[in-house]
Image 1 (cartoon, helix red, strand yellow):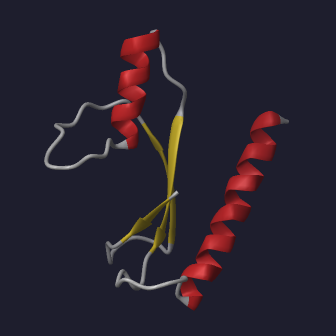
Image 2: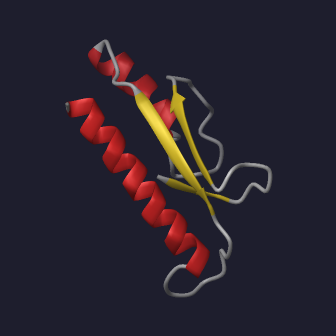
Length: 89
């Protein structure tokens, strides 16, 4: 699950991701696509990958989530739970 700062995406956005190599840039993080690529390179295959993003509304330092982000987070958790239950049968 990820939060999005983009304006032109739905409040909750779910998509499949594929292995993809991206340059390291100036960050200490790896994209989910890069992790799938590393799994494929190290182990010969990688699992399917998905990302679920929820729109973020306030990225200032502070505690807690905005009320709208709390609502979207609950909806995202319900979606993930539903998908996992369907996946495992």
